Length: 130
Image (cartoon, rainbow, N blue to C red; front, side, top):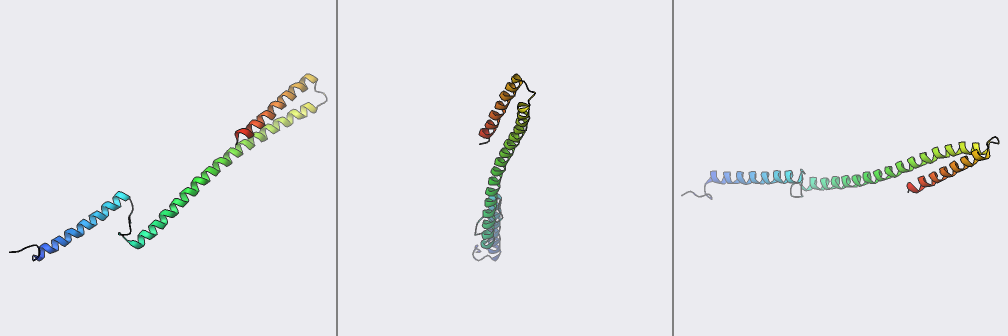
């Protein structure tokens, strides 16, 4: 009577089957988590390093998001300031025309009205950039 406990071939096959099952479980865990080292059971030292790297990646991702927000704020500010600068150049021309002694009163009134419109436009750029 041979049993599994006394059959050396069966014992070797059982040990080989157990090792294969363990390797398959490890591979399935790697596939499911997409990590080479999913927990400390796989490799304690590598897991500690992997956790540190994951933490650093999370911090860098957060910093990149914050930099993206700052870039957006700077883009809005730059656009608003460029628009204000262009408007001030237009208003400078109007002020020169208003100060010109050869300008008639009707023309001067039109220039003043246009200038007030530009002042309102600058105020709108400031309000919209908030």
